[in-house]
Amino acid sequence: MPNGLLRLIVPPDSRLTPRLAERGYMAGPDQIPWHCRTRLHDGELTVERHVTDSGRFHIPWPVPGHGEVVLSTATLMERDRPYQLVVELARGKVNQVRGQIADWQSIGLVAPPKLETAMHKALGHLSRAVTSQHDPAKAAEHAEKAIVVALDVADLLVASYIDQALAARQRQSPRTTAVLGGDLGPEMIEPPFDGQFLRAFNSAIAPLTWRQVEGTEGAYQWDVFDRQIEWCARHGLTVCAGPLLRLDALGLPDWLYLWEGDFSNLQSFASDFVEAVATRYRGKVQAWHAAARINVGDALSLNEEQKLRLAVRAIEIIRDIDPATPLVVRFDQPWAEYMSRTTPDLSPLHFADSLVRAGLQVSGIGLEINMGYYPGGSYLRDRLEVSRLIDLWSCLGLPLQLMIAVPSGQQVSQPAKGRPLPAPDAFPGGWSPENQAAWIKHFFPLFFAKPAVQGIFWNQLRDLEAAEFPFAGLVDAGGAVKPAFAALAGLRRKFLD
Image 1: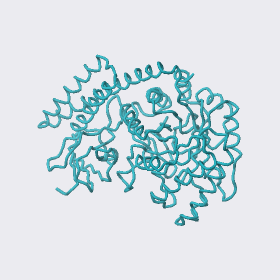
Image 2: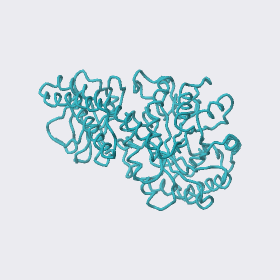
Image 3: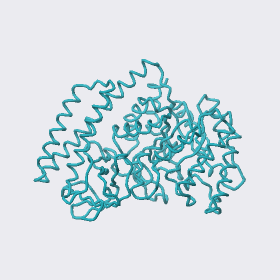
Image 4: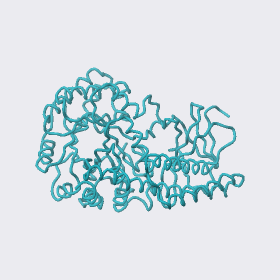
């Protein structure tokens, strides 16, 4: 068998499609994906990689009642004999849930009795799956049942964690200190959406990206952003400005491509822009989002070192002009699924760690979680996986801000080139305005329960024609307000007011 090849048997009646199979990837103990190639053929899924270390295989998997969620196996070593994929996915999820129960109990979580009963049921199905591998159909049947029950247990576990974590925080302080906000987008907010925004949010992002402000070289367009920031001040909203340097095609002005390959001039232009923005809005904003997409942006053929240098320079300029205002650097796709199809040297966590260790006075880390989009977004995951991601990033020792988006629909007749698309059927029942609101109600309490999370922002206000994420807005293309707005307003009343 060639080095780096892993073989996984897929049952004949599996819901795994070639489209899902190509999104599978392997990761090591550090959870960083390896560059690999997956192929589904004649009931066997093969994973080719350049390393031979043991690792976990991750793949979006359709689960009854849960939609299309990423599952991962336990650690698999390379061997000649193929694994049975569904059995290994069941083993991985059950083990993950058991380990998380033990971890949280060790810090004082009280597990409800029904959790133990359900966990025993999941273990029973897993045992029958493992001992029935001589009969693949029977093993797959029990493994699928184990996965469903394990996901149910994971949801019960996270719900118990949320209740107890929030109760503990409320005993210390009756008010949650996190901010709940939304990205105002490239236009001035107008009635009736301004009223909806003020009911839902106590904070706002004024997206002072380079492309929006300096679409023509040397011609700064401040009007919309001046009005946005003044409107926020008038209504008592906390203002986050940026990201100033968003290192992808939607964040950089077209005229800058004339200088592609000339990093010295690119850095000079970037420095001038950041200085102009920081000087104009110093004292008028409560946080700077200095840079974003530095881990995934592929504009201008910049390498990782150059992107890091641009981010560092932006931070230094803002700190020279405004040393007191908190400063955040944002990272997209924090699970780093994209690394399985590209060959970067640094994961998003390593990018962030490099900035933190450099002593640049970064005040917080932003994570963009645009869930349910492919490519260019994060695969859909259950609440336990999201909880574990937040815990992992909190190890950096800095407050976290989350930028969130999920779809409210999934049919795009003529998608814009290069834009992410909603993954169809990723959410139980399919994406709809009602299910977008249901996702918000299900996940946002977890964000409020995490001590490291100090800001939660909805990443797209309106479904404009040029909007990056189709159907992610809180207002549809026809101007109708979606149920998500009311869901967010209800969460604000419950957790912040």
